[in-house]
Image (cartoon, rainbow, N blue to C red; front, side, top):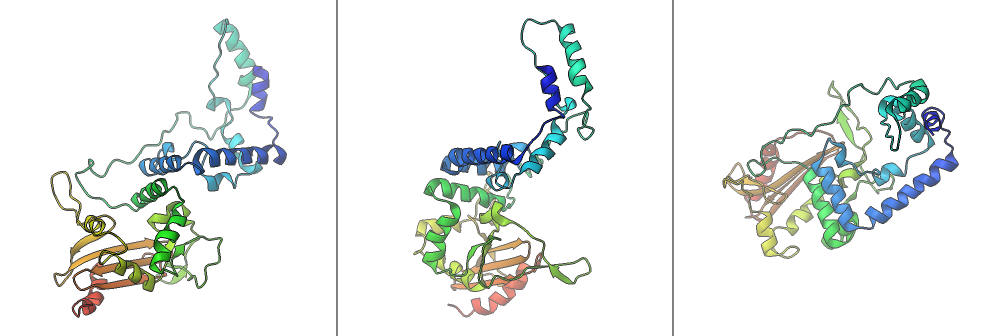
Length: 327
């Protein structure tokens, strides 16, 4: 048996007829245990949000979009990288003598060359240190919206993109807002750009935003953003108590205001007017949405350029011209 297992460390033969059906079995297991279970999907997103660096943040059998792309070469690459005696633990159970077993191990596994890429001392990934103890400081992270999207799926029993289309985009008439799905033809989708080190424009690199739909994975227009902003100015689309909660600044444990409600920054503009606003950036795009609730003015600014870090005050200076005139 030892000789057989030692041979498998170097002599394994994999063919497509072996690998691809097994991959499909794994996909079906994922669909059964995770994709069709809202609670499991929520837990998957929670773990991904909690463990940004540690392997605990990745599903045991992998993400669906990764599994479906696996092939024979991926399996062989993993095999050659990790199947080695210096990455193995041998467990023997039974009425045996250590000296007899050691001789057998040296005769079989001892002949297999170690994998030099495997470090002698295991490197264990560590989570980054917390920004601050929970409840003592506000620190914005778009990954929080990933967690919110998982909660939406769990509560609604519906996929997040489907829910957003049926309960937000269609009811509000946001005809030009959609998930940035690379494989789909999106009418009039803009080209995306970035700036090179010398300052000239260049095509933005390819990016797959499916891992963060709620945290920066949607395409939209300035007109649709204004429609959305207008819909939360007063009760109607959302209940009055929901709006109140959303636009009330959260506080730390000590009662210090954070200037952030539920999804909105809340502060005073240059002229002293109450403002609700949020900015966003992704590969190839930047946006800013500002609401003046006292005069019902909404201003949206979008560009198909990465890292166009305009100052909030610059956008407000445009909005102030309208906010002072009322609705």
